[in-house]
Length: 311
Length: 311
Image (tube, rainbow over all chains, first blue to last red; front, top):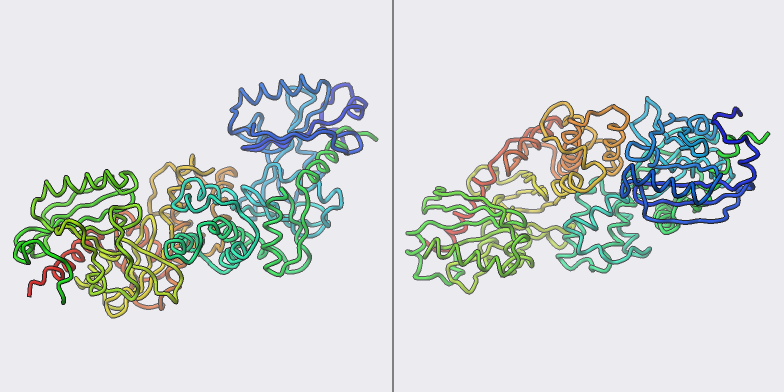
């Protein structure tokens, strides 16, 4: 592999110090300190997403990190590389694997700091984009946590369904499931009814079935409101039903993207992968759950390995 | 018909003075002064919906109306009869026509003021409710504006699709299309992109086709975001596309509720009926548009006629 970045003092410097890897999203930021063997030494999370900061505050935050981790290489992924982030890192186009991500890494004025590009759909496919999830997807493949050919579901604010072929992201689609749930909970006619925590159980399952079979989310959602008014649904169950409904609609879509065989890898925050795995099992699709953090660390470790040219 | 309300000074009083008919919704309030022949003498609209007022302010507002229209009978429909309104008017159950609405009218402490009940779905059907639209639906049927057997679409914050049989609402379903559009415009990742006015045209049509064929609204909506980021969709077109998408999903659902023949009556605010009529024509379904105000006036006039026992 070619050395594509201007690296401070060459590769020895990078091999000697842990990597600071940051998953810098819209609302949250996760930082990992990763040693040369790929082990995570430190993990931190805060609400310092790019949307809450603005460009000047982002620059200030990066300067603080540089002071805190002097001489470390910093690799950043996610919305930090978007138009609302720090530096624009153009998307690489599907099919995208480790090699394409490494080629697309964007250097900055600071030779120690680089930004991982996002991924966009192929020109012949429906418009779609991701930023941040690509590191987890490629990291999980590279670590052998998911097969080189299969389907990965990455639930979240914007759930991603990725078709992995020969270890690369061949195609993917996004469903704004988490965002819709948050909108309904915060601002809709259902707000008062969606205050209880979401849990797996009969109401969640009923919502999943509703979401799988209903062809109109707007109708199914109003059914929750009417069910409450007519005494057919308890207020305490409404949030689980609504979550099941949105996730049922989501997986109904995701499963149609893939051949009906092979287990689905559900990758991400364990609180979410648990819900999706439950909904997939209810749909008779085998699946297994993977840690998003572990996959991210694996991805960043391998990208770093390609960048610092250890051989 | 039986005289079901205690009426002040008997029927002559009611025949002599115009009726004050109010469509009192969650966010807006429309008042009509209707003479004995059913003609509208005055029409007013304001943002004094029940949600913005609270119970005490609603009572104050009603007292003001009583002073302004002394001795007039006031008939109120909509959310004013809900748990967030003034007095709870229990739903009548489908099938519901003029006779059932009249029987369900709720008197208040003031013998001149009555509340029209809402309508709920039959116990064997999916949970659904309406408040206010029933007056327009029954009014349109009673005036011969829609056939006694057919399908009526009432677009709005919560769009209603009603199956009319023998002049009664046999069954209906609600799709929260308007509310979803408002949520997306005000609070979502698409907010910045949805500021332009919605207009009928190629982008609206493309959204309608997308909404008709996509089985997952959450995926189609993110496609707008991705289309903007990838330069495939202009920001000025995004609102029309999104509106088309939601309306396409809505009518795809509504049309499955009805037999594929006969024109659809699209009843309501002309700004909305225009969009729905355009989407229906694109789906090769004949339709015609009707004024919601005219239908409401017709409905209230006929309900008043039954209440005051003129014969």
